[in-house]
Image 1 (tube, helix red, strand yellow):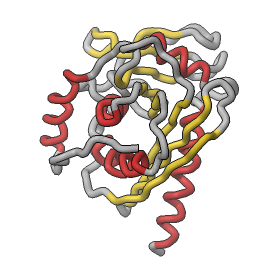
Image 2 (cartoon, rainbow, N blue to C red):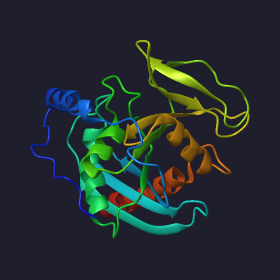
Image 3 (spheres, rainbow, N blue to C red):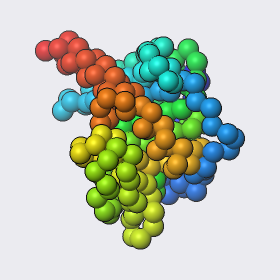
Length: 228
């Protein structure tokens, strides 16, 4: 599938922040049409101290959660590690992986933040805008404040930053730490949480994330071994 070109790509943290501030106004936090997600893509990236980056995309069939397609890419980065700007270390390689997909998925689930970000523009928002595909973020940790949700699966509480609601702490397994869901683009928060619950029949993390994480780590290990 084709994705939008990024030109010019930020070379410094200041340029990256300026781009986030410019693009965040374009995020649409609602469903433009009744949602019908038949294929769902999970994506994840891994990188090492040498600057090697591995990105993986796993496309699953909604409902059965069977794997339909995978795509990967390897690259390098010299963009500095700055909290809130991690997308700029991972995005170029992730977009290369999207170019290797045969067809666009109906929904993208990122192992990252969306609106739950200091500038309301996390990795999930950026991917959503570049691909034009409904996108949401499911993070392992919260960026913002929240009350502990109820202990039962499906319970949630609001995440806020500076008093503004930006996402939900969602319990996907009874008695297990919640995940942190926020909008990326072209989807509302109720729909996003419904999709996350559908993707977590057995584990805390969505099956899309689990499979993409495993694949990108395998790819990174191969890349690192080749350089030894």
